[in-house]
Image 1 (cartoon, rainbow, N blue to C red):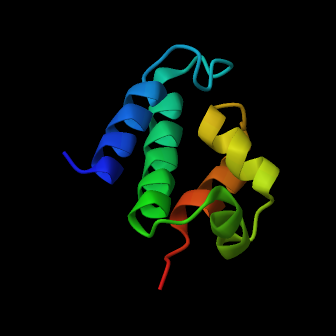
Image 2 (cartoon, rainbow, N blue to C red):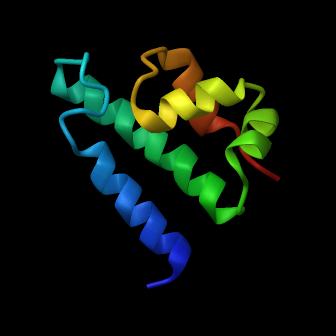
Image 3 (spheres, rainbow, N blue to C red):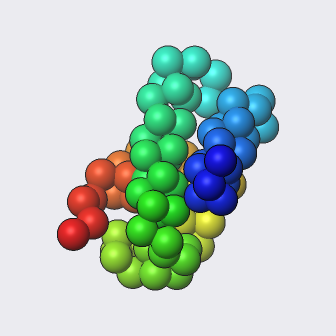
Length: 88
């Protein structure tokens, strides 16, 4: 398994923990947000970007990227911005 694939696999397991986005009790909403976060994280790793580089590209603060990837950001608009902008 490639190093990037291994990092993505480890991160996806982190998303499944009860401590990730723990304030969201509705499972369907939590699953949707986790899927979006995984999409953004995968994109960041695929293009070998640091959190700082990714934050500039996505036009969100570095603190926001860190909160999203730690499961402590609950702002759906920011999570969407983190995951949906296409890198060219």
